[in-house]
Length: 401
Image 1 (cartoon, one colour):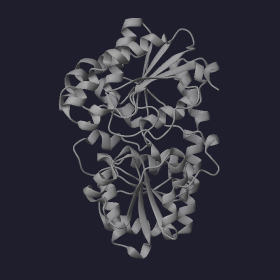
Image 2 (cartoon, one colour):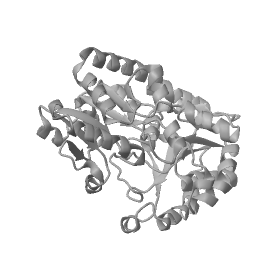
Image 3 (cartoon, rainbow, N blue to C red):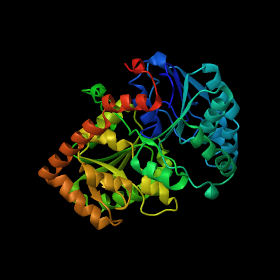
């Protein structure tokens, strides 16, 4: 641990400010507790990866940008080898930005290997203490494609062992670290500033066309971890017109790609909204949904993932439906705290039974909302989480607002 309190720190994160939910939301919410003069962010340029920023940088926060030129990304899909090589080519530029800031501490956020590696190299070059903050489990390097495979094999354990503190988003990630690397970590969960939530956020225009419909809402990026379950949910809603319901996807994903991938059912509405509108949409929903896959090859992600949007859901005052494997960390977390109705079977009949209860049973709805509010207040409130993060990193408490 550090010998003296840190007064100025730098956060090295691939995505900032947030897309919709996810890693960048965790970072943004947490940094909201600190005085802007106490930190700086080094992050990827908006538009230089597959997704769109939908939130402004908070006032007075200093952000140094590095990124692949957007015109390259627009012509070559993010997942292709060329763009991935270009992103690793940014490491010297990222490192230069970190060193130029002259921080007392480097906080490197995973996932984003180029930024994580650059943070480690800056730590070695300048002797500045390094803290790692893992939002997901890291993939087995032997299963990765190039150029990720050699970079991860060379750097991963060096980075972890060099860190003065290893922070993880959940107990499940901590268990994975212990099993694979024999390393301990500190759990600092996702957080939300309950005191800063708008009392009357602006409603998306889409809601005007959906009056008298029951709204089943999912907010955030729709990627491999969500597509399977959301498609199953869409088919279930389509099969039950008596519910008079619509599945609303608030996402930065390409609408045409989603429709081509099976979300072209008449019961599905797709929109891209600003952060305040997303908050309003969550509150206006009849049911909020979070899903993890039952199929796929990245078992560790499915087993340890915790959808960060669920913390926002807990604060919305709306019942939550979770569709996830029963042996996942997410499912165990729900059973522990009771804030959502869990459907742990990958079939439409189970979803239909659950949704019937959640849409019609007022007592069930009230119980879930009450448990969700108690959980977000006792576990995820920024006033609880931020001081724990500062203490784990050795950051002077005077840096907190």
